[in-house]
Image 1 (cartoon, rainbow, N blue to C red):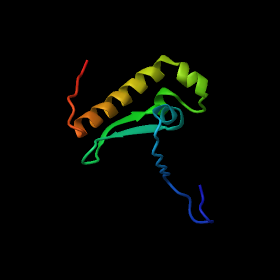
Image 2: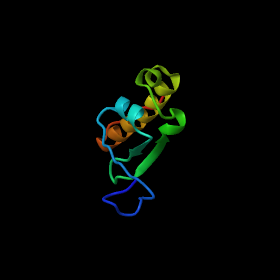
Image 3: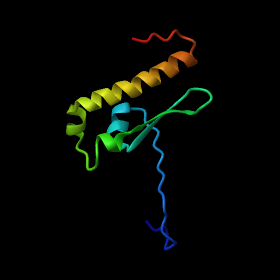
Image 4: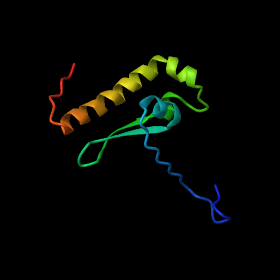
Length: 92
């Protein structure tokens, strides 16, 4: 990748803050789950190893792995919200 004729970039970073978890699973290569305070990385989900590109939305969402990944990330986000708001965290 070149930017305005300069030397090629060795790495690329894109940060997308998503409000919808299903969009993140379909669009992202990695999902980082962060703690509430202080904001530290709690987990890294490597979506690209589960769903390689090119991806088709209907194939991703109909896969059992989609449900597992959604549950994993959602559970961690839920736990962070409950802990940050002082509510009891119930694990199953």
